[in-house]
Amino acid sequence: MLMGAVAAGFCSCSDEDLTKEPSNIVTPNTERNEFDIWLTANFQKPYNIDYKYRYEHIEGNYNYYLVPARYEDAITMAHLIKYMCIEAYNEVAGPDFTCQYFPKMFYTVGEWEYNNNGTFVLGTAEGGRKIFLAGLNYLPESVSNPERLNEYYFKTIHHEFTHILNQTKSIPAAYQTVTFSGYVSDMWSEPPYNETYLENGFISNYAQHSYQEDFAEMVSIYVTNTPQYWNKLVAGASEEGQSAISQKLDIIRSYFETYYNIDIDELRDVIQRRQEDVATGKVDLLDLSVN
View (cartoon, rainbow, N blue to C red):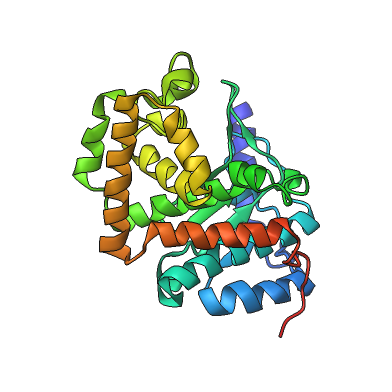
């Protein structure tokens, strides 16, 4: 009898005329605001970049609890990306490089992605075209502090952009052999690896994850910090560690010059100057006027 009732239920469903009632699926029809117009003029038209600041669950990772970014923080981050990344690469490598290689989508959320080992995800790069950027709701306390701004946001952007470039031109095989035996995968955040990374030839503890992460960490830390900071950081390594870091940096310099015609020292100088402009308030990070 139960099976018969279920069968009858299926039959009755199949006989319904679905054209009589309107669909329950509602397509959002969001009115474009001032920020949307600014994004069209500054991201979409010149660079074909889609900057997503409204929450879209399909763009995130279902394994984490995420929240939308605050409107003002999304505006601030868009200005920062434009001034400190897009226009920095324009200045060093030209707009054609930026249009061709810079990620075509940014998806931003307000909170970090927390892991159960005490770490949290700052951002990710997907498919060579998309950068996911988390933690925007902590942005206000970082804008005037270049070290914090880099630690939580812009080192992440340059790190993920390096992955995108590596997906276009592979990391040289020679790089993989410099500290080949030192990669420890997910144990990078655990003792002793989170304490001995410099003496083992890694610029950060996360660089020990894999040669791909090592390469991206080297690039992102190098370009987002002053020469004085870099030299002091490397000086904390053992003699063997300093030699390994120096070898890696030489390979990185050659890689960027050969494949992308970029002098990473010039890139660093440009990024440093633009960071200082932001820190000293020379850039209006909330201006939505369109010329």
